[in-house]
Image (cartoon, helix red, strand yellow):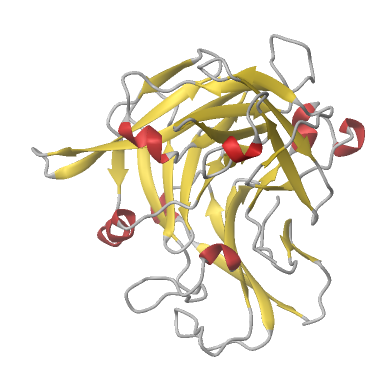
Length: 356
């Protein structure tokens, strides 16, 4: 069975109520790749591309650890006419899902709101196209977007980082671009302030984002599951945004060779989330003599989960520490193993995925 890549979504925020009253699970594991189908349900929302092509999206929700799916329908376009890659999720947070569709060689980005348009009918899902920034920004094409719910899931912001070489300072200069659903416009920040130690800078320069997380009400993190987290703070302030780097704990399982290249895809072993103002890094290790621990703690036997909890997200990076909790899991463990407030889905053919 092929691996299924997923993100965690909270559809129960559609009505601003608990899952029991909303009729949706409190959270779901959503596959990142869409199927092409004209089927519709109560979650369906539609809009048009910038070229006028109708697009509809529907979600097919299941209680975790079962995987929820979503489907795309573009009238007049058959499944074989969609470009490779197929429609896929870029980021999800709260009631919002940001995804991309490629048609005729052009990428179209959409934001789905389970809560709907705050100026329209309440609780009716909505779909909006994300406009390209003008003038064109090359970093936009990399699709390293983060999404932040605003105003109690009524509105949202989409952000990405751009960088340019400053020959005078002989260094890269970073700026944030932020789209607001309230103003329906992009805004470019002032040059970001980089607060990086020498060791952090080495990791920062090799950073390769694999996912994005929301940290508090006004910060985003770009996660490299091999190295650490780029944390962008003060996104909405008129002052300069601040970039810090949070290295992953040194005690994590070592899945790289001496050159730093992974033997396996890291999402099969670990994940990062932020909940209750804490950034949490969890890893799952199986008995394998070929995977020593990076800190020299020795090879562990059997199956276990390690949960690393950072200090509160509001503290400075310099004062942030990782606390470790390890849990032994029997070989015949159930499909869902609860670790504090995180849940680790252990299913054949799937990566471990987290939900707060």
